[in-house]
Image 1 (tube, rainbow, N blue to C red):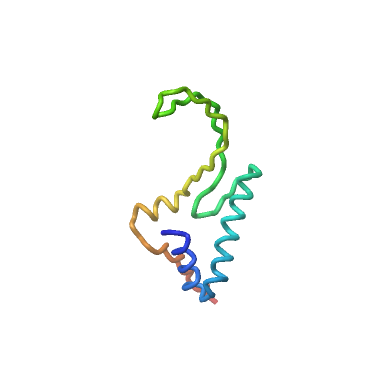
Image 2: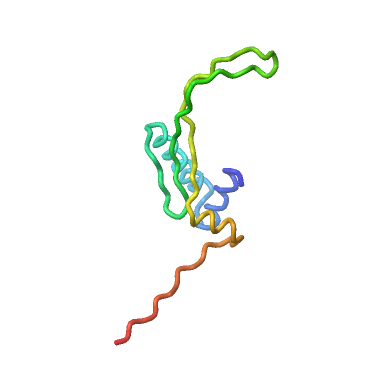
Length: 107
């Protein structure tokens, strides 16, 4: 699924214009990026969490010439899926299970 597909899906399911859906999707992505830049962790219950990890500086090789190249330290984004997401992917259910109905209380 591409970002355009996601925008179309939001537009269809929420019955919004494509422009409004695009603003919503872009706002969510921008918020995630801003939080990761400041070092915050993003946790979306039932989906997963985003955080950054620090990579140490290292010496790499240019694959074409074999020359040594210094690779600086950097932060990389990391996504960890939740148990619920893993279970949904592995069971093959396209739709998440509906919450169980609570029986009416006796009066």
